[in-house]
Image (tube, rainbow, N blue to C red; front, side, top):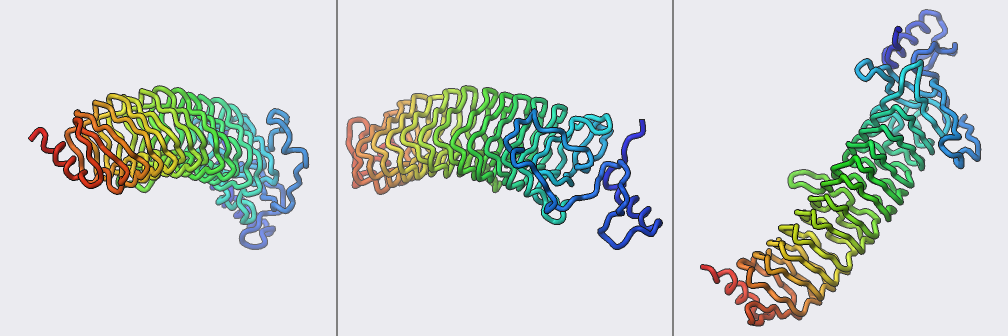
Amino acid sequence: MIKKLTAGLVLPMLLALAACSGSYEEPGQFNTAPPPQTGIATPVPVEQTEVSENMGDWQPEEIPESPASDFTYIYDAVIDGVEITGYIGNSAVIRIPAEIDGDTVKIIANSAFSKDNHLVSGTGHAFIEQVIIPHGVTTIEKNAFRRATNLSSITIPDGVTSIGDDAFQGAGLANAIIPDSVTELGIGAFADCPNLRNAVIGNGITIIKEETFRNTRSMTSVTIGSSVTEIHGYVSGRVLGGAFINSGLTSVTIPNGVTFIGGNTFSGSANLTSVSIPNSVTEIGGGAFSDTGLTNVSIPGSVERIYDKAFMNCTKLASVKIEKGVIGILDEAFQGCTVLSNITLPDSLVSIGSRAFMNCVSLRSLEIPVSVNYIANNPFLNCRALTATHRGVAYNHNTFDELNRVINNQYS
C-alpha cells in the first residue's frame, strides 16, 4: 500500500499545481478547488465555528469522531502509524479518530493543539474546549496542548505511555486523570493550569518530575500512585522548581515507597495544612515544605537529614515530631516557624545547622540530646523565650554561645 506524503511536502506541491493551473491568486491562499486526500485540509476561520450548545454536556462515548480532514497529519514508518501534527477544524469539541486511511493514530505531535500553533487564522487553538484521545495513541509529545486555555476536558486513554514536557502547560483543565499505562510524565506537564482542581497520578509513574504541577493554585487534591519512588524538585545549578511548587493543595498523603522528596517540592503551597510522610522516605530536600500552611508534621526515622530550609517560614507550624534515626537538621531548616512551640529531637541526632531554629519566637523549651556533637553558629538566633537543656544544664539566649562551645568541644 502506498502511504501518504507528509503535510509539509504536500503543501508546496499543491501551491505549485495551483500556480500552473492559473487558479492560484496570491501568496497564503489555497486553491479553491477541493483538495486531494493528502493529510491536510483547507483551514476554516474560527468565526465560522458552530458547536451545539449541548455538546459540552455529552459523555465522551456520545461524541462522534471528528473527520480526518479536520487534522494535519503524517504517516510515520518507524511507528507504523499516524502522527496528528495539527488541527484545522472549527469545532470546540474534538474526538480524534482512531484510524486515518486505515492507519492507527499513535502520536499527538509537538504543539499539535497548542495555542501557539497558528494554523487557524492566527488564533491558535484557544477555542478548543474538549478533546477525546482514542485508544491506540501511545505518545502525547511536549507542548501538545500547551496554552489551550479553554480546554476544560481531556480524555487520556489507557495505552498512552508518555506525556511530554509542558504537554498541558497553561491549559484550562479542571481535572488531570493519568492512566496506569503512563510511565513517563514530563517536566511541567500540567504546570500553570489555573483551573485544575484535582489530579490522579496513575500507578505506572515512578518519578514525578520538576514543576509537573507548578502554580496550580486551584488544585486542592492529588492522588499519588503507588509506584512513585521520587518526587523531584529544585536541583542546585538548575532553575527548575519543585513538582508541586505554589500549588493549592490542602493535604497530601505520600505513598509508602517514596524515598525522595526533592527541594522546593511543595514550597509556596500556602493552603497545605497536612502531610503524611511514610517511613520509606530517606531524604527531605532543601525548602521541600517551605512557606506552606502545615500545622504539624511527623518526620520518620528513615529520613537521615532534614535539609536546609525544609520547613522554613511555615508560620502555622506549631508541633514537630522527629523520630529516632534522623541524624542531621541542616541550616535554616525551621527558620521563621514563628508559632512552633513543641518539638522533639531524637537521641540519634548528631548535628544542628546554622540558624536552624532562627526566629522560632514561640519555642520555650528544647531538650538537646547527648548524641549531638556539633552545633553551627546561631541555631537559636532571636529565640528569646527559649530555654535549651543539654546534659542537665539549661541555656538561654544569653548563653547559647556557651552551649555551642560545650557541645562542639566535648570530644576534642
